[in-house]
Every structure is written in C-alpha cells, then in structure tokens.
Image 1 (tube, helix red, strand yellow):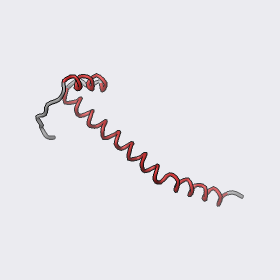
Image 2: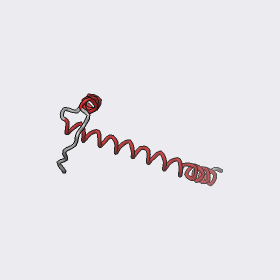
Image 3: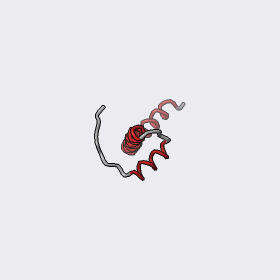
Image 4: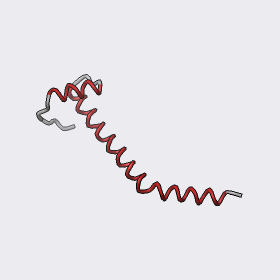
Length: 69
C-alpha cells in the first residue's frame, strides 16, 4: 500500500463519505476507487455484449433449430 499526500475537496470527501457510509477518509477513498473500478467493469461488460450479443443470439438460434423436431 502506498502513502500519498494529495489535496481533496473537503465537501466532496464528506459527501462521498456519506454516500458510501464510510467511517474514515482512508476508507472513503478506498471504497470510492473500488466503485470506479466496478462501474468501469460494468461498462466493459456492456460494450462486450454490444459487440458479441448478436453473434451469440445467432448461435443460440442455430442450436435451437438443430434440436427442433
């Protein structure tokens, strides 16, 4: 873990701390960083679905057709 000295807007920090229910500044920053990572992972997954969804649906339709009597 790295120790870093940075300036943070106290109003923003207090608001984020309230939103996250964090008890300390360190916990607030750590949980906020985790949230940014989680949100980006969701965006990445959404983009993957946009790119690959049509192919997956086509493949599923082909499989369904193979198994129909």
